[in-house]
Length: 371
Figure 1 (spheres, rainbow, N blue to C red):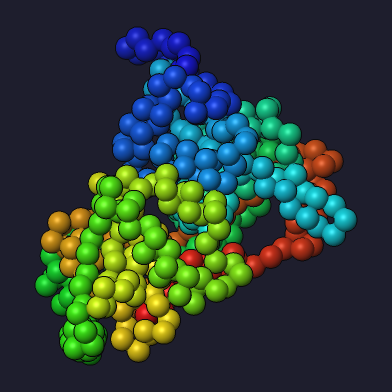
Figure 2: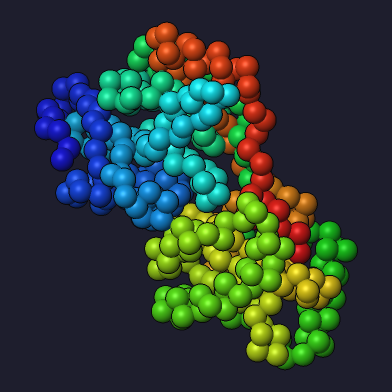
């Protein structure tokens, strides 16, 4: 429950941070969703439904953890937490932070750049966590946020690394309509789209369907068959495990599944999630034996036409690749920052982390789509 507070006019509104289990805290999911909607730039990936789906899929036996910060009786920030142990030779660093898997491409503390609020959040992590490092991955890359996090960490008795570049996520602005969007593309791009569509239509009985709700769920076998025949489906790092499909099941009420069929056979699949601010590419696959027909490109174009027709503000591609760059009108940069306890273990973790520092995370899933 949120703490009591003095909200009288002119009174200082106190901050209170507490560690909770969102799944069993009455009313918290509703507060979280309302706060998400009121936070500029925040997406469904930082909201209660997506975070609960992640937990059910990837940590079904563990209690959900989050740090909630309230300003008076109003929710003002949320940090979902997961343990992220990291091996360094014979040692294992005790780290925690946002849940991490192939589906967690963007995160948000839902606290803006409020240093006092962030300090309360970090102090609660220091007080209640058994880990030595707090990993804040793939936050919006903004100088004011990086500065606020560094100052808040210091106020909370922690040590912060400088921010490191995170993911680069392409997007396209679409609210002006399809013709206006297409006018931002080259003449060659537009000609190639028309040509590829004609080739597919000449190859047989070609159709594209957009599925939501119950029809989406019923199409899971067709979707999975496309994934199995895609080049990603054969990769060791493919997000094609039972946990990944449990996540898809949990998210089936959101967004749409696009399927391209040739003579009744599904040859490309595009899963889109959606909120009021954007549509988001979640996964994209095509039958690699049909690569010469470019079904992924034609299907992607159909999705873009639909987003423009519905006047969605933008389509976020949730990745960066040559394929996405051809469709993008802008890029969303992310950053990652690590905070350490100012203790012997914390300083040791920082030293070990520095000695074995890894580069930016390898691209996964939608980052590697090529046609």
